[in-house]
Image (cartoon, rainbow, N blue to C red):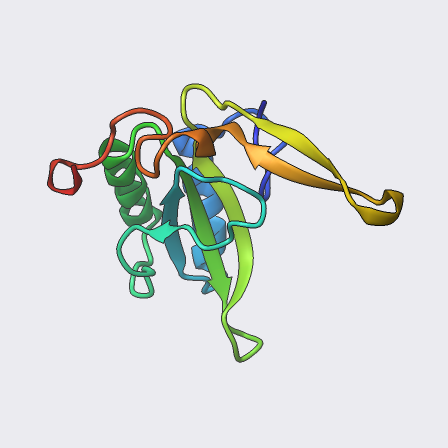
Length: 147
């Protein structure tokens, strides 16, 4: 099952050259970029771990791509996304967000059904990845200091 979150989620994986073009588009508009990663891509998990701080001072897409590659090295089996922020509204607003890496295997979700009082039925989504502990959901790919 392929997680479909963010821009370009229904397209094939972007190459590094295509990612660089998207970063250049964001930087040309004055949108600083940041990189986040997670091993729990549940749609309601909007707070992923940040890779460093947002790159407010970078104006060259190569610097952002360098950080993406470093995050990939540290977390080869996590989801990694790139965000671009637009501050023109006077607050932090996400203008662009897309996944730049996925784990080799995406286990997907199941739907849990629960019957309650008055014949009501509730449904919950359960990601199969959560059956393993945080950090080990897609294999041992944490940096040495975190093990």
